[in-house]
Structures are given as C-alpha cells and as structure tokens.
Length: 274
Image (cartoon, rainbow, N blue to C red):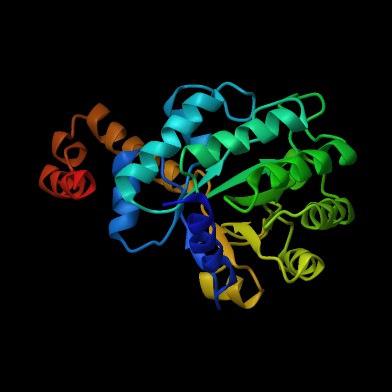
C-alpha cells in the first residue's frame, strides 16, 4: 500500500468517533493474535522489544535497523497498520530523525513516534527548542506518507510539570505532528487539559492516567482518540510465565504445561503466512 494511502487509512482511525485501541505486539505470534482479535492497528513497543533482546529500553541499546526489521515483521504477518515506537528517532540531530522517518516510510510503517528523550540518564529530556526542531524535521520528512506522533516523556522521567508538557505538545502540534502523546499524566484532570490544549488534533494515552486505570469508554469520554498498551501485554504474558515457572520449581508439571495449544498457534501462523 503506498505511503499516502496507508497514512489516510491509519489517520482515519484517529479522527473517527471514539477513536481506537492500538495494542503493542512484540513478536509475530502476538501480532497475529491481536489481528485475529479484531484490532485494526497495532504498534511496536520499544520496551518490550528491548526486553526480548535482553537489553534496557531508552538507552539506544536496540539499533534502528533492528527495530525496523521487527516492525516490518509485525506488519507482514498481521497485515495491519503498524505504528513504530521509535524512542527519540534514533539520532542526535534533526537530520538523523528525518532519516529514521524516511526509513520507516520505506519499511511500510503507518506511523512513528518521536520522543523528546535523549538516552542520557543525566539529562533524559531534550531542551525545548531541540525537541521541537526534531519533530518539525520529522514532519517535513514524512510528507504526508506516515503519521507522526510528537511525544514528551516529562512525566515518566520524573518531571511532573504539566505546563511544560502542554507547552511541548502544543509546539509539536504547531510543528505539524499528527498525534500528541504524554505518557502517564498525573490524573484525569491533567489528561483533559492536554486534550483541550492540542485540540482538534488527536491524543494518545498509555493505558490511563497515572492515578488509576480507567475503562476504554471513560478514556473516550475524556476525548482520547488512541489508547496504546506499551509493554503491558508483554509483561502480562511474562507474569503468566513467572507463575508457570514457580509451579515448575515446586514440581507441578501439570500447572506449568498449560497455555495456548499448538493447534491454535498453528492456525494463527498459517493465517499469517497466507
């Protein structure tokens, strides 16, 4: 599907009444399961991908090429639009970000997120002007072929400054970002302020505000257009593995030998191959 056509298809999910839920897959089978469940788009998760490779998220431990290959796999097997959770755009300069966006377009991604993170634990959030310049250059490189999400990680990097968060998101919107995103605003009131500040552009939320997990209907009522899950489906599956491991350590083979049947896995894999 040409980039502009994929852009329109993916963007339409963000602008329709109610928006949509966009779960994050971490391998081919999880992507197939989400597609089979009826989800209309999925995303990568930089945290889940990093964990599958045995490295930490947010420290440039996963290369751009590895993440692109991973995203292409999810798109190929699922047949769904895929949004790439590409951390800070894989580069120190706006031009590096533009190169990542171009590579994402060529890889057939429907969307890509550009964060204001730096990968530097001593200064995890980039200066305002630098962050805005990177989003602006991403939009220029996109040329209407891929949905650009402008994201600030203030809240999850220990900077609980709602005013600065809104300042950044509105600047990203003015720079041309199609979707705005600030993971884990402190509460529903703060989320509402973000939605109002960038309207009519759509807002993504990661599961819910920080203070409580809301339902999809409650988030939609608050004006959220896209709900992502980040690494939480992956950690949920790892929780099941932890329980099975505990059972195995205790000698309970029957409890450890449960889960999705290989017959069901085979059905899903065959569907993806077709």
